[in-house]
Image 1: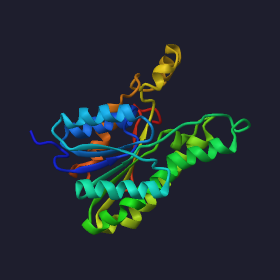
Image 2 (image 1 turned 30 degrees about the horizontal axis):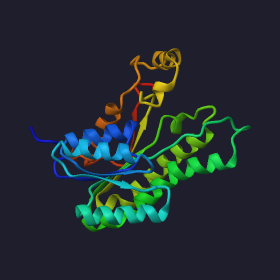
Image 3 (image 1 turned 60 degrees about the vertical axis):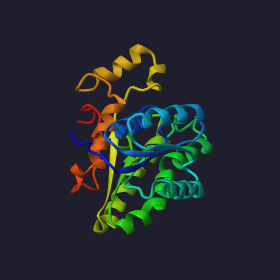
Image 4 (image 1 turned 120 degrees about the horizontal axis):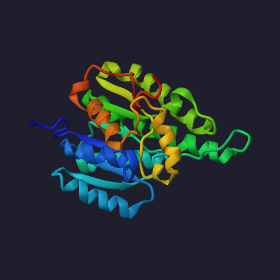
Length: 249
């Protein structure tokens, strides 16, 4: 059976854990060659690189801070030198620094905007020229249901994730004539190592409020990414795909 991403080359930011790890693994299983970035988890990056190469694809880890404009350009230049081209960019890097508005400090607001939103601008701008030259490319930006509905105690996170949606729609309009697609995935409650730290009763309360009565898995988000990265979605751009089990229905 043919693989949906056979021969494609993708960059994934923040791939050493959680949703990013799931996307990288699923892409490799579908035949995609991968360049993935990490910020500090050197050991985890080495392990993931080894795991991905076992699927018979070319995979390479790059230490880079996507929130830094210069570093973003440099890592894209290096990936292009190593891989020749890029077909897909998955902007996945993100952090949280939750607090109520009355308690949040300016530094924590700015940092979340920088890592979650400005990184999307940095990486998209860095890859734009390549996509324009080849008149093709799929941009996949990771937002959140919080960017659609807001959440108390997450004003910085909600602002960053809502900003990603506006940015993506603008880019879809700008670059559509060159066959470059820009779409957003908005995950809901996805169970990762981060949610494993929550009390079981808290997690169960989240599950009970979801129509499908379960939290999502990183693979659920990855499958949506595979669709948007593949030729199956060639006529889809400017969209927000909610992977939330019906949470916002």
